[in-house]
Length: 433
Ligand code: EPU
Image (cartoon, rainbow, N blue to C red; front, side, top):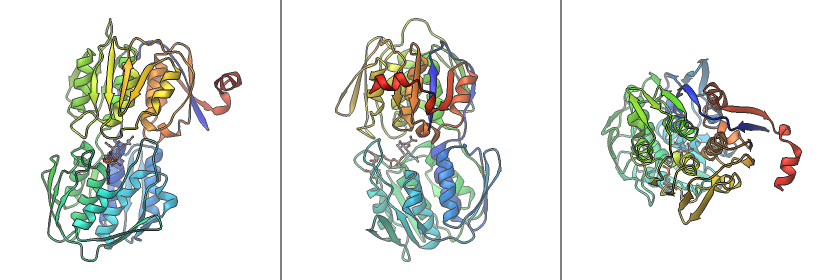
């Protein structure tokens, strides 16, 4: 197993280019199964989650070839209808196979994805949506079995107790584009990654109206065709680098991302007093003197503040002057990073779904444990501003969703190295027990 060794080293400075969005690329790779013809995708990030999705596409019978950097060709002439537990358990997004298999095969067997450290992640809305499209759905032996022989368009309301569902919306849209008749999808997720999926489907010949809004009207077509598509930029990667720059009072230009993808996030950082300048496809974080102000944030479905940037903001708020409150409305238990930040000297308490963060903490390096993808990023961000050296274990979580994270950070002055776990000084681990 590998670890990161991070040493706090002052202000970051330079430029970072943002890669393709993981959460757009995953459903779009799955959607490539909707046609027998070849699909070419560009700007696909090089991540372990992408490799897991490629393995699943190959398992169901697609020919998948990497043509160049970020450039893949997928052709699904013949498909099987089943995605086994062994592959699905590696990544929750493999549930996105349901929609395309149902649409192409009129039958699907997809293992129910397992639990997840960020909290319960049910699939009841996915199932409800398929039933509204007149599919018969049964759960048995850990699998979702769908018989879609009689599938047709219908009215589907996808709101749950925490709002809409991102991958649930992806599944229902992917099924509906090949379902006879018209589907009215209400309370659809509006995340930019869903917008990108819809644009991809339209390029394949799908008929979707209302893209980007919570109400989608989908008119089923008989077949879709191949196309070329470039994945949108990763707003969560961009937000992570913006916070890393702010954490070190750095001067960093984030390139290749339209600021409008990060509206609620940038609004909160402006409220905290972070100087930012915007271009059409760039965001300049400027060095500041004095302290940032605390903020109160509630995570919400898009266009609200994204849950995938909550842990990173939590690290930054330890350095403001005052008390910040971060409330989770998507995953009320997504605070696994908090005990690790506390080990580094942060003063944070958890009250129900909220983290109460006292600012002006002096952080110091420590051996810490990453628990999920975004929590890993929060620990790196904290380590960049900590006195001394932080050893971050279980960084395979970070590799799921950040492409070349350490080399991008090192290029702007971060002191970060990927090392074998055996490099951690034994006395540090001994003291930590
Ligand atoms: N929910 C239900 N029933 C369902 C589905 C979801 O109640 O059938 C609830 C969930 O428990 C949660 C809320 O609805 O409270 C939203 O969950 P959603 O289904 O939107 O999440 P997801 O589609 O499984 C995607 C991203 C996550 C991101 C969430 C929220 C992908 C592949 N994953 O997950 O990304 O946190 O939306 O924005 O798109 C990450 O990248 O680190 C990550 C976890």
